[in-house]
Amino acid sequence: MTSVPLSQTARQHLPDGTIDLAGGDVRIPFPHPDVSAPLLGPDDQPYPPTAGSRELRELIAAAAGPATVTAEQVVVTPGARAAVLLTLLRAAGGEVLLPTPRWGSYPVLAAMAGARPVSYGPYPHVDALDAARTAATAVVVVNSPRNPDGTVVDAATITDVLAWAQQHDIIVLFDQVYRGVAAHRTPSPLDVAGPLPQHCVIVDGLTKSHAAAGIRIGWAITAGLHQPLTAAASHLIGGVGIRAQQAAVAALRQAPGPRQQALADLAARTRAAAAQLDQIPGVTCPTPDAGFFLFPDLHGWLADTDVAGWLRHHHRVAVVDGDAFAAPGHIRVSTAVPDHDLTIGLRRLTAALTTHP
Image (spheres, rainbow, N blue to C red):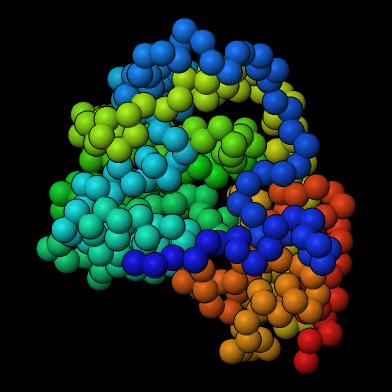
């Protein structure tokens, strides 16, 4: 399966002055720990533990919340998408159920794992899952809060999905990487299920919650699949770099106050930006339940138009076309950019969407 980079339309500060609202990383000023370590030393001579250092796994388990999560259930990976891929390998030769809209990498990773992606629609109601399920269904992906639109799956639905999947011997991959940037605590299988069910894998990381995309630290939390995921990681990854793990330890040990304030400010600007775009005639822009993406609906007045290309070339603002998320007629707009970029970018978007016939 071929794929298209989600932010291919532009990069910030291109020569033509394009403002980049297409990225998936956090670019606002953010409090980071001061980490001073040599670039190479004795700690780097041996291979790192395949599942991650004991110290980091204990911190991840503690941050997950429930006392029932242990370091032995954690597999550290180079970014959350590696944890997704390790889990999807369990579906090789079968099918993976995905939401729509959905992160553009899910179907690509499923294909890389030797599985066939199948859509179950916008929300994981059991009826929708049953309609999409076949004898080949091996994994169902639940992304909450969801990229690209910030939809949050409620606790009752999570409980139902876990029970349904157990009944049909299906693995639940619960991707919660945007949970850490929610203005309020969003439900997780870790909250509703007591001890984590054997057939569930929680995927998370530091990219969004700690604005740390550059160190590539993600993880899987699993009670029943730790051994096969670790075995696959030993061949595919060989262990995450020790310096990246040390940076992750520092991030998780940092006092949460400044980070929580930065994330609260981000949530406020996201709400304000949604209200601004929602006032444009012909545009519907719901306030996302969580996360920092807006996903305005442009159906009806930009039909059959390359929206992202038109905005990029004629209005010098980069967004991601909804086609990348299997949701044509939408665009994804990031609010996690510097103040100047967001102000100018929204001004250009508003002017473009207001004046377009």
